[in-house]
Amino acid sequence: MWWGGGLADELTGWLVIHGVTELFAIILAGAAGFMIGGAVAFPGRKSRLESMRGAGEKAAMVIIGAVIMLFLAALLEGFGRQLINVDEVRYAIAGTSLILWLGYFYIPRRGEVDRRD
Image (spheres, helix red, strand yellow):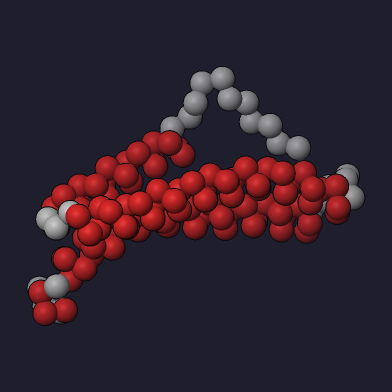
């Protein structure tokens, strides 16, 4: 490796084992904020308070999911990052979690209806 004294691969493996899940949770939290902000900025036929209340209820569910994801990231950071010393295994765990999160968020589910207010 041309930088980091040969430690870049190890550092990256050390970070990505929990970073994939953590970054998805941060994106979800930002999306929840955009939901509330959009409801305030563009309330439609509702009052701003009613619009914000409805968006806040939906955003609260998103935040609950983000908190669960952050908890899982903390477990990966606390245990997986310390107990797994092989970089290839860390990369495999990060890749597997990336595939699982992408599948969870982007594969359409049967029977779901797009309910936009």
